[in-house]
Length: 73
Image 1 (cartoon, rainbow, N blue to C red):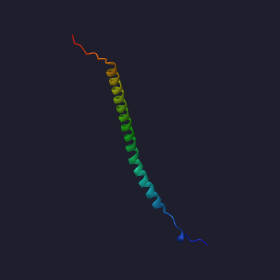
Image 2: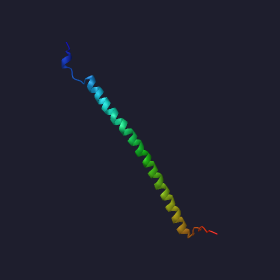
Image 3: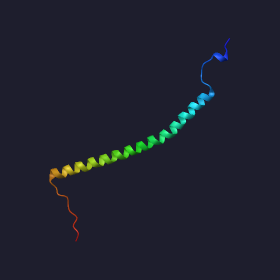
């Protein structure tokens, strides 16, 4: 015959407490990761823009092309 006092496991209160703690962590972590992802994308775009400008400048230097100056009349 099985007795209930000898069983091992978690009580409902312990499980609910653990779920509440995990949900609080998720609520705070998800927006932080989303913001981090947006910052990373912006940084990647700036880096690609700098590389493009550098490539254009190197091409102009190789071709010895002088960029036109803005003349005010």
